[in-house]
Length: 318
Image (tube, rainbow, N blue to C red; front, side, top):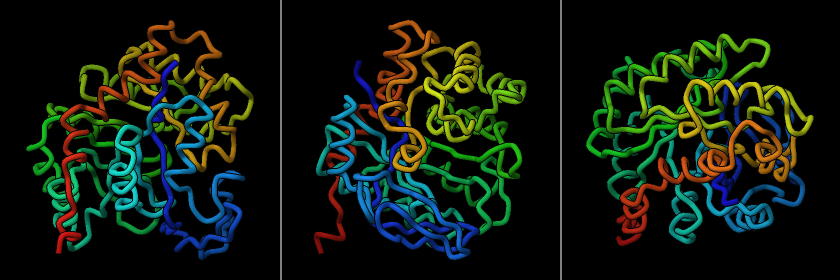
């Protein structure tokens, strides 16, 4: 079965930033935050200080993953330009979203460069509480409104959002509804199935039912094993979460991803790539949608793919 990893990260150089400070690589896939927090960021054999496009392609080939969506996150540090380079080098394999700090002085200049010059047609907002911004709302902050008005000129543009879990002030599933109504020609993707907890499915149901009337809201199920703290393949707690999402949204508004490389330090990439096939949540046709067709429809729109293929960085022409 064909697969698209709908939430994937390349790491040219580790440059994490959070309320824990800056991240420094230690080798062998390990890293440390300025406050002393240690973590294993990259699985053994994938890279000592980085996770390159070539390493990623090897992992993908070994697991029959045809394509991947390259997202950004503060954990690794934004890898915008390296993701652009990877798409230009391997256009059949990757599509990329960029990220920007919406409160940066040059935020709009950064956005215009990535969209108009580099051809990006997706952005990732990681607003999960990280300790280096005051709380803000996606749907009411004027800094965000300015950006969304710009994106509205590009029908089919994709807005991916990671807003963290319900314990964080950044958790705002209702904001996705407001934005989807306001910008019906944009696609909104909620990362990590809204951070589910199989012991509290009513909370997930509440979010999903808010999204249900809006076909331009989809969700991906990357890293829910990490969120559920689950290593027992094929992840019975995650099965409950995904079954509920199917019941409310249907199989065409859910897609698979892994959030690797970090997630593959907790569960093998092979298990993350095969767990849904080991369940009876989806029919064969539905599984094809979840594993490939839905991400392909949303992220790999022909006009979006072509925009990046046709792009040329004007900075390099000087």
